[in-house]
Image (cartoon, rainbow, N blue to C red; front, side, top):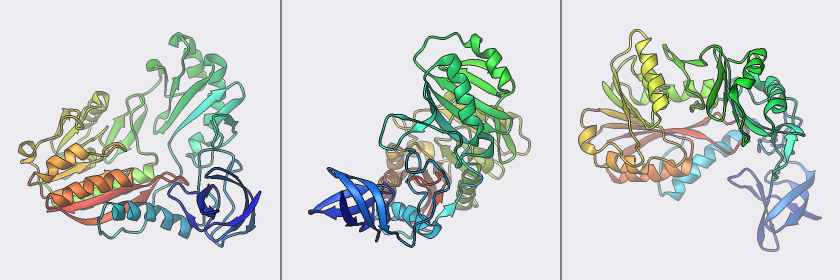
Length: 397
């Protein structure tokens, strides 16, 4: 047991103390606090706060500190916003990029519409902090109301039929989309009565459809998109709207846009209200969902689609000639190969959306070296109380 003082906050949201010349990382602490901790190597465990920071607030969740999900519920809003903005500013600085970072946009909305819960004989919930043991929960307050209490209950009900599993939930405009993954060999049809009883929009087991009472759908601009099973969706509806607003502002005046890593079309469908679009992604079910939404939506400009692995086969400069603007929104690994092709192109405007500041900074450096200028960088917070942050960067030649 050691008494020490927290000197700063690390990028994983952990307080940092220096003990015997070594850094010790202590979750759930804040800079300036005098704390009592136990130490195991470079990891510290908070035992008590002797002198709390003025930035410390009460957590909204009774499981905070025990659950391995949230890291920052104890941080007051101004300090929380500056921490998340700092994640972006630090990544740019480390990449040698001098660009202003706007204030954080709060896009948590009414909560996260996606979650994955684990089920075991001991219950349903998330893993305990720094552990592989399950924490049984009754409610998760960072989820949308449709999931806060219902998700743990549904997970427990499914466990009785399928055993230990990882269960994904997506709240849509037409009901809950639930996917079950486990290692047991089960016949999906045995779960049909349960899916009906739980009134799910769709239930899938290990990639196989069990029952779909109605297609899980979300609205994207004018369009209603029927989601493929396990398809990517922004964590909150508010964040999708905020990101789309920043993207559209960056693309203002563009007449022909390439939307790369387009997914089911959260940007392409909105862009198409004013400009022609090429939407490209390697996810064929997502492309099919986008095509279906375009067919059933009035008033859109032409939307062409392309199924292509942009990591291995990015659009080359010759293919980019028709476009006066490009947007890309890759997974966490970033879009290095595509950024290199864009750097060789003559595309006037590039809008980059990212959920990983470090890979964004790497890709940004490539674009800057190719003659672009980074005009704005805006962080967007949709991952409540986590150390993840979304961002949008606007580049122009």
